[in-house]
Length: 391
Image: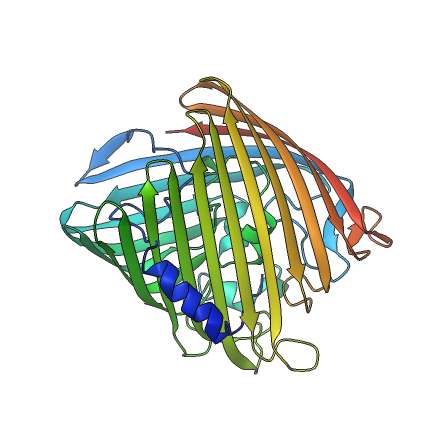
């Protein structure tokens, strides 16, 4: 899927600077970790100092629509078929990230999800979706790591610091991914990232990347990343991320137009009790030369989550979102898109999780292509089932 963004106004940059002065960055743990992500299970085995963990993810989705917008863009991230069972992913992660010394991480995604997250320049992905190939193995992360107490540095390919949700489904609480995860932010970056833990309340990061979802740099311009986390209390944390740099307007097909792309992402996590957690995620992005008249395209959105852990075996999650694709750059349709999702999770053992969810999407335009592939509507409903085995 194509990437997108635009310069933040100077006032936004000033506000961002204040936030990142007391914001979040990833500590010397794998970059995929986010506020809502549970502690990983113990490794199934270790070799040469590297621990192996992972999960198996299978699911089923029924959409009332075709899974596409009238523009031809998928209207869901991974579960985009009208009525289909998915072998989403076998995730294998080898990790060795000591507090002091050298290490690294290799993270492989095997399955249908690999085709969605594959970066530009990996395998034959640089040819674009039009080549008709499906890629069922994706080297989602692979990097060299060096730790020196509060400082850690990684160099290679790693997941983005933006967003409340992650690529690994065992780190999320819903089955379907959010609008913001799929249409507001990147998936991965390739470059160098440094993280410094200032104290127990504040961690900051900075890096230089090839761009958004790019292993091979499509335009030879770099994107900077800045971020941090501020945890004023045990029950509250704020994550801020900024990405800025020149990007091609589209990589598939490769566009001759380049322009500044900016993204500001903020995630706040609030723990009301041992059972109840709230998360808010806000995104604002722009891309120069991407609007229909060649001007700057803009998108923004907000997502809210309420997670209630009923007991050790049952969890219920409510998610609501609003996304404004002002110029149609992200979805191919200039629209205001809303969704609400209710997910019930059953955890019979620490290795197993079964999720069932219902979801309703609504646009202010007749944006969703119906299952007949011809007519369109402003709404779409869905039902999903997912089974996870974690190891």
